[in-house]
Length: 228
Image (cartoon, rainbow, N blue to C red):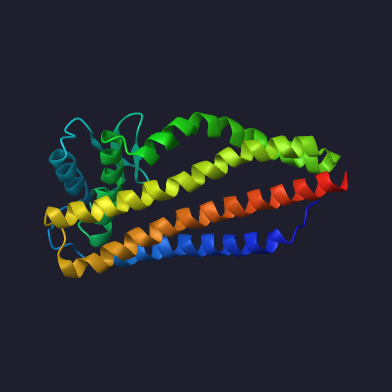
């Protein structure tokens, strides 16, 4: 069964996801042209906030690409793309502070982040197996395979959902850090919110797609089981 009424909602969610990606790039580009009043680079902001939180051993490293910024929990390093590392814009300091927010979450063992880290090895395995089980179940009309595929896929969905509070909390910390350290002024908060909220929307869209797909598979499974 390759078409389902839920596919219409999933298609809409995909549209939201694509729009969110354009929104991220558009806001990052726009606010990259607006200098931050502090005059600090993204790397300097990251180093400042890390040191204020006692994370002297967490390095701030340069990573290739654009919008490739991330916190590596294994290496315990904040990695910033060139436009953020060297940039002195609202966009640069916002993204840098956000990634440091994840480092502080790690330091403080923030619950959702800890759970996501523990789930990662499981999700890494199950997310690779689930599509094959679901596809095989649909082609062979074997609902036991579909059921197993649903169980494995649900781990990936849970991972996506758990990511939401992690990202929103990191953004909230970023804004608090920048205000407390005087990195941004009150009138600059609008730009910070635009940059961080657009990025958060991509995670919301991804989670929505996953949840809708899971509901679709569950409905197919229940309908097929009832027919048997």
